[in-house]
Image 1 (cartoon, rainbow, N blue to C red):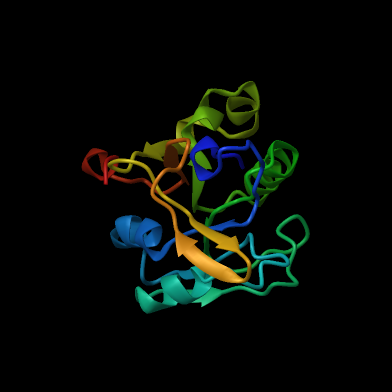
Image 2 (cartoon, rainbow, N blue to C red):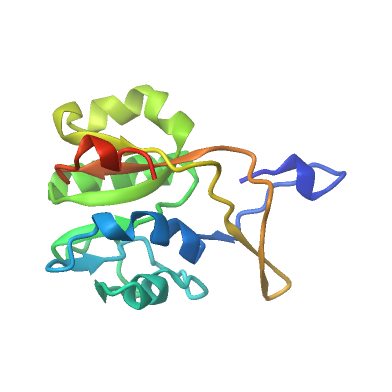
Length: 170
């Protein structure tokens, strides 16, 4: 992920994490009678997503050794897939194969990519648009800091969630 405002010299930085506020925005849409699988935790030892989802009243399964491409847990998937396109495409294919309800965070531009509609069944997709940008937490020098200037807009992609139209903007 790149952010030109972080430095006078352009550099790519990939250590970003989902803030609690991102999960708070959609928590009311997560069925509390379902077990949530935070599915993109492979080697994500510093991510606090499962903790945040639990704090918000959800039953959450996760393990930093579980690979979404090989595992299957829970009733519903709530996660933020890696930013890198090849990995994201593989995860989208796996989500389509699992065919279980999910809500994932994605760069809004991904929804315009050919692979997005080729992989996911359009009749089950709903986009939830947050107000403003999701500013991800940045890890540098073993310290997590909040950012204020994410260089892209994100959306929540919901699949088989049967959400009401008034839930499409949070």
